[in-house]
Length: 279
Image 1 (cartoon, rainbow, N blue to C red):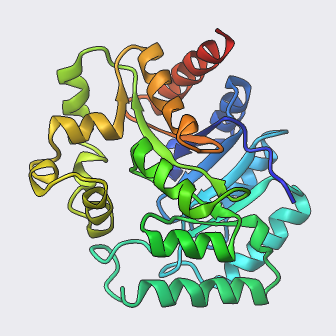
Image 2: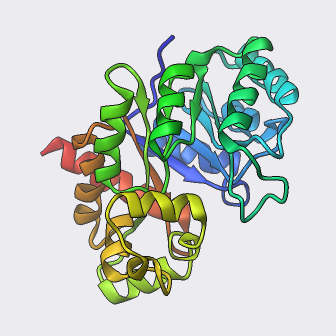
């Protein structure tokens, strides 16, 4: 089974997206809309977004193994697949120890969760993992269609592709803000993810593997780190930085919009990316 995920994906949280916004993003050229922040196991919003669009793929980024019962998720997958065949991609992940009080043995827990999904008939080809480190990337390679990493620079994409190999999906997400004032863009980034997420162990460890230091991670991020995680500047500059993921081996680039109007940011980004592609 293959997906038409498009060059660009839009990452939005439940409170940021409506069926009308999904339709607008489809018209803007997004191939996929990713639901972030641990959507409920019934996946009702994903179904509503698919109902409102005609070609858009909807994915979860990600269903959290600690909060979403695998059997319920599997039943939701089958319901959605029956209604919208070939347009839903199930992303799963282990969340963060800072958030989930029962967090333990994340690798084994994710393996068990994938086993439950498989027993319930969810195809591996319709599942991806929110993988950052080498061990999770190998699990994504061996058990699913690929990986959907977030809060990663293009260097992570290059390394992840070397682990996943050819034929597996690599779908990184990158923050974007069309703000030409560098100081203001960095301030906005530090007051939201990624700045506020640098204390999360999974993200911090991954960034340190990439060569960032404890000093880079301190105080909501050094300029060097913020600039690596956030594509900011004029729209053409944002487009260039996002497309660096494709050059590093990504199949698709997910866009995490920053700023007061995330849908407007996504529209601006899409226009700039497709203008760059046309040149």
